[in-house]
Image (cartoon, rainbow, N blue to C red; front, side):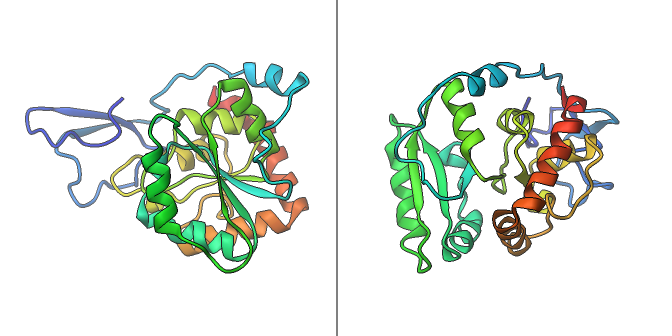
Length: 233
């Protein structure tokens, strides 16, 4: 369950998957010997509770934008400064970026606000307090698109978002020392598209804007994810 090398010379092995790593482990970033499965390293039950959550009457948080918005459904700690330019790039085109924060730890949100600042273009950052899992599923459903932050992306959350049929744009090459889980999930589904698995922060912005502005393209990818998501669970 450890997301990266322990760096501890007495730890012998690191269990991972070919789906989540480069073809050749480079740079000696692991002090352990890699044990690379040809299957995923998780067994995740289908989160069918999402179906119930979005099929019953509910009210969304009033702070959610009424216009199309990009959702980053990860903890504030995953908003690394490396990812800031992606957020700014999306905001410059007039889209809002929605993030969830922990009310008990507001300093993470305050730090991010200071870093991002105001961006010309009309888009802004919208912060909503953390919610229960049913309301989380409803916010995912209401979002236009979801992005996987780097250099530390999502695992469980991404599995839940993909079950909901949402497109997740990820950058496996940007994940640094962390296994590229989201890109591995696309590989498991047989979705080998550079629109969803990009190669840089700049190409991530371009892909996000393309999906945000092209409903037909977005709906087509959502349909493909829904058709093949069973391979993840």
